[in-house]
Length: 111
Length: 173
Image 1 (tube, chains in turn brown, yellow):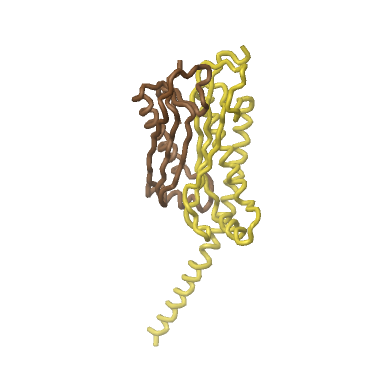
Image 2 (cartoon, rainbow over the protein chains, first blue to last red; image 1 turned 180 degrees about the vertical axis):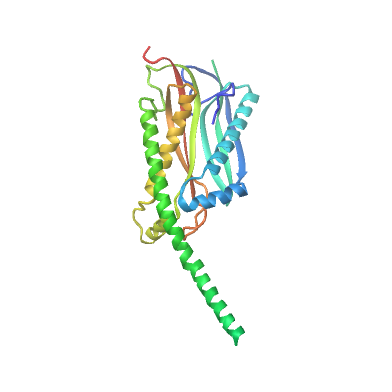
């Protein structure tokens, strides 16, 4: 996943290394709920017999997480922040075949 | 008479077929899963080892504050993830083991593989983007889907590694 396309800096630490936080804007969140692709699911079912990486799912979750992060960053941008610190991820499976990916952090302005 | 004989022959064939589908096919699947699964696991481990050796000297730490002598020019968050599943044979073993309790050895290498692979992907993506180190590394495990009690169904585990990658202005400036 490539986050560097955004001008907003994100970090999972409580500060941005080498810079000072000058203003807090509060918690920003981003989520997405994704269902599995039928074709991918069949492939994953076959792959399940011999074990190993389920590439379709890996990609699906990476894309979804990137989207959740993107939404979080957009929210931070609209608040006028230039960084998001203390970013955390959460995954919850809503039902068989659907999962929610959730990213949250604190929007701040750094000098 | 001839027709009756034909009927009986067909019944026999059907019996044999259902016998095969009920007992033969799962057995064949078990064998295939055992041999192919073990090979895939072995290959994956040697691949992980090779890539870890290549990344030797790239600092990846779980401190949440940076060592004070690190002069940072820029930073960004990096992630690495993998969805992995156990083979059918090992799932059955794990199920049997679950009846008696105790250590389920077949699951341990799976999670180890996933964790090391996720860390590797994170480190490799940071290195590709030109970063010099990663700190505050966190690992998260989530179960993706349910496996049936008999070992059937999709059983995926997702492992996510994430941390803050930094570029040094000068490391010991």
